[in-house]
Length: 184
Length: 184
Image (spheres, one colour):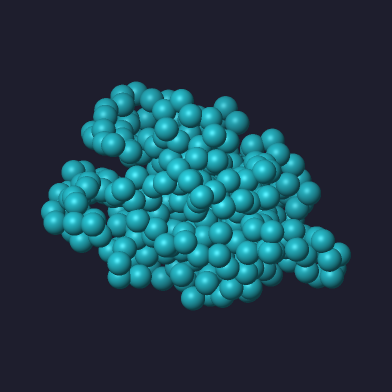
């Protein structure tokens, strides 16, 4: 709706890093008053709900410096400049898990934190997984532990807060919903 | 797992704003090498899946400067300093929608962007909604349009990308799952 628009009066880049940049903006509100907005720009990312033929969900455990702890997540990674999300999804799946897939479909895309960031995550469903012997591997400075767990174990991981992030909790709920719809 | 930990060697605050702060960290990787981390600190937030007695989901449309567009979201807001999430959920629900609720339960909590931010969102389910005539109202500089839509309309909104953020897509899927489980 047009009546909600915030016009940019001034935008200043405070920081530009390897992954994110921070912008401080002066905006004009719908009532004519001014306010400030703190905005993070991010290249966007993909995440992959990868299900093996024996119905295990492929997860990676990794240390998240922002949280100062490890969490268990579905495989994911940032888009490289100009990279198609589907290509990125296949690349990240192979690099983080060693799997290639015969079927890959987009489930949904969402902005993770619209209040302050433009990060978008494209979530894919990968099936027909085949372990590749000579899989493209991780950057030598990336460290993850691979886990393959059942849907029930994944729900338990959420209860125990080992799974604790939006895209992975969404993914587990997505699989629960498919399961529930199948048995209807 | 201990083998994944990244030790902080140095942490520098680059920016501290009204809502977020940005920290640049030098870390030691598990292989002994060094790397840099760009970290956003955020106070955390709540979001409320509010369902009316006639089964409509309460949504708010608002302009998101980070996206330069309006999107339709479940009511949500940042935690104030020291504020209990449940108190915050009741406050935001009333301020953004004019509703108070007789029942409020925590559905889940998740980190929105663990790759670069510590923002956590606590998602509540509110039922027994009553419109309050003298509801606490929004800050005069906050602008939202209220919508009450069916679950089918909400699914359509996702298809049309009017609903486009993680917490709201999670919320719609949560209601779909409850519906599917009820009919099993």
